[in-house]
Length: 520
Image (tube, rainbow, N blue to C red):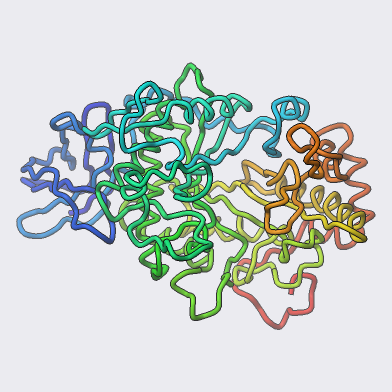
């Protein structure tokens, strides 16, 4: 016997496969790596036509998010363990993913968003910014989830509402930062939702991993995602339209951007896969179009660490391989990839001069120069989801310019680089978004000037003079595109521009005999 699929219908959970006879079904919490799983129910069930059907809401608690084990006699039945499908009869919004015809986007003021014809956007939402462990009186939205009550800060949620309405569709970046991104710092909440192994003593641990080890922490996380999905996928679009979530940030550099303490990459991916799965289940409960993404930085086969820190920093490729293995083992679902292909050295925008990236699956980094490698890698059969490749969004990247004597030339690097990188992304078959990280230079962003406008503390929104890259951004997908491409091609050099626009992606590992070519 074998379990092939578990489907959540409006009122039932259907476990399907090669099943027969009387079976024991054990339903438990989906915690990973920490607490022993809480047993929620154990029942005997008769398989009919290869399926076992269970009540979805025993005692009023939704079983969509549970882990299932099936036993025949004394032998566990192999196969999937979690809900892999949500039936359309259970979803309020059954519309398809609303793919815009233009992939470019940037977070900016509403007037500029309208002027630039932006059709989609990204926003950070931090759990400790919008949730509380207790009611705050009139400033509270109470949300019931899996038999518990959770409290959202009304004023913070209304700020999210306002930004959600700025573009036709939004993808959220879900964060769990105890010290940044507007965290209230409420101790009782942080004790419940911060990962139990979070390194409070590490100054650069900006974000905690979501807690998949404890029922309480996992409950806060799932309620967080479910609340956002319920509010922002409504068919009437009252509060805007949410189409997906990126779970945490650059998790291959977890010790900074998704801290769970020292942890092997295998253990980290076990927990992260469950956070992705829970987010997908929460979103799919309301909307068929809802997508989830793993967030990765530019380190693909290399990693942002020395060998002694391998429990803190991982390679993106290894995480993708492990994620694929874990999800296929427990029940695959359509996770996707949010990648950050900054130039090799973030200080220099002329990525066409990058030396580290190559055009193989063994490349140490994926930058604008070789971004096609990611699509080719994910198009391998072992990564396909029901015959289709994972979708890609380039969700954070930018082009730095410098101050002083090098300002003009580095701003020209950025302007030309945007054009070439955008054209490369647009040619790819699975890319749904290409964002520019910064609207205005941020004086607190690690010394980088990634904006399209210079920073001016005396101007509204600190928006100073536009940089040349702003004209490049405006030109793409407009009647001015042809002239912008001509200028960028002349600046970079026609031979190199054309080569990088249609590079020879190698479907395999690195062949060191080819070092010395443009990609070597």
